[in-house]
Length: 258
Image 1 (tube, rainbow, N blue to C red):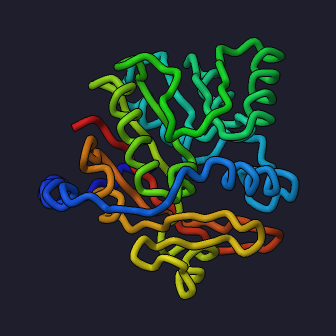
Image 2 (image 1 turned 180 degrees about the vertical axis):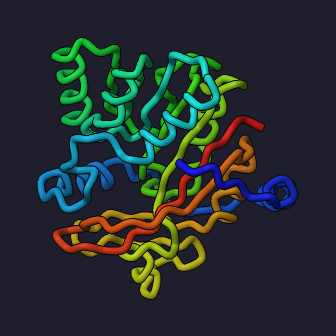
């Protein structure tokens, strides 16, 4: 990814920490079963790029290059919401031992099978990423999340995810998260009929999968309970969604524990 950093980040993050002390209350219950059924349907339809692409996400290769430029030394990684494992396989082929977590057992079984065939150090688990992770405290050198966090449409569940991330990431480790901007060409227009505008909640009309959309300041505020942002950028590209090309706008963040 690029070298763009926000000069105002330290001042902005200090402000966000104060705001974060007022916790958002939500009536949402655990949506694991609902999310699981929706994602099973999506992997059958293969309308979202992550459901059918086998090559690693460009942003993951750019994050790895970012680590290399800094001579980063680390060997333990987590791929949160790993899907069919394209990013797990990439990290494992570049020297990381990867713990891959995904909601669908079909996905985790597939990742485990591919890792065995390729003789790569990946351990895959089927589980909700907002439940306790099978990862030792302060053991991760890096953790990546490519369009998973945005789909946890329950603020309490997101908080539990952040707590697990803070527990398992080393003080010297990095967290990389990539998600759709509120200006995204596919998701952005859905805000006009959001069922929860205060949370920027949108629903994919093709597969009924929910998402939260974010601005840069939104995500800094949300992670201010445990993390500080090192770098952030917004990337624009063209990408298919459900058989049609859209101008996509994606936010990429590199964070460390506060």
